[in-house]
Length: 156
Image 1 (cartoon, rainbow, N blue to C red):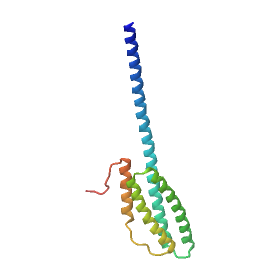
Image 2 (image 1 turned 60 degrees about the horizontal axis):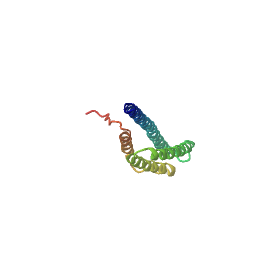
Image 3 (image 1 turned 45 degrees about the vertical axis):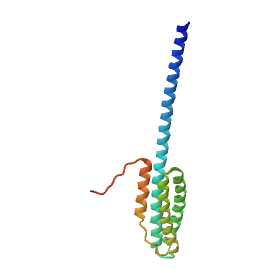
Image 4 (image 1 turned 180 degrees about the horizontal axis):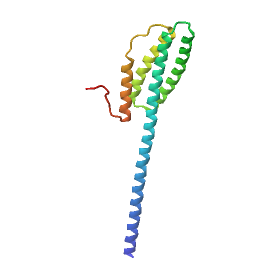
């Protein structure tokens, strides 16, 4: 009788160990899959936001350079406002997914974009801002958030 109980306990311990190992492995696989899924979404959001910011900045420059009252200026202004709405929506997505440091950099980019938008709308000379430096800081924080190593394209 005791040998049967020992055998039964051994089988139960083996089954429990097998179940726990399988559950732990499945849980780890699920966590990796979810992390990969969110990283893909983050990357897409970072790229979309940066592309949209560049589009808004370009359209605001074109609208500012266009002659006051011209048809092309009105077209640039309309396209600029449409792109600005997309940028605003993308920023909200970014706030939900990005790291706090990346959000802070994106906010600084937003401030620079708003200055350009106002200058284009009012047809006044915009103050000088180093937009490239702001975008580079944003890109750096996005890379850090995604775990992408820094690559410096400059020689030396």
